[in-house]
Length: 73
Image (tube, one colour):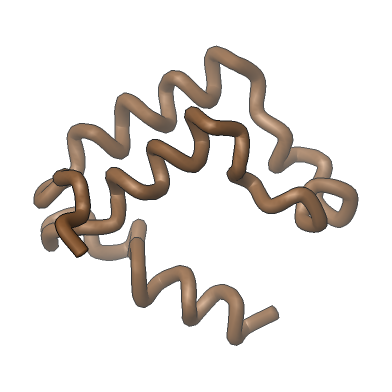
């Protein structure tokens, strides 16, 4: 599990709000498309299933992060 956390933080680190998070766009897009959270995560962590309002709030927050942009790679 720690490996998953470390890998996730490499792409989007909520502990570093003041630094550009270039993968915030990807996270917002995955939430909008229903690809996040990953299907196998929810049975282990039922609280990870967000309401439509919670998803909207999370996406809005991601869009306000420094460096929010669509990846060019």
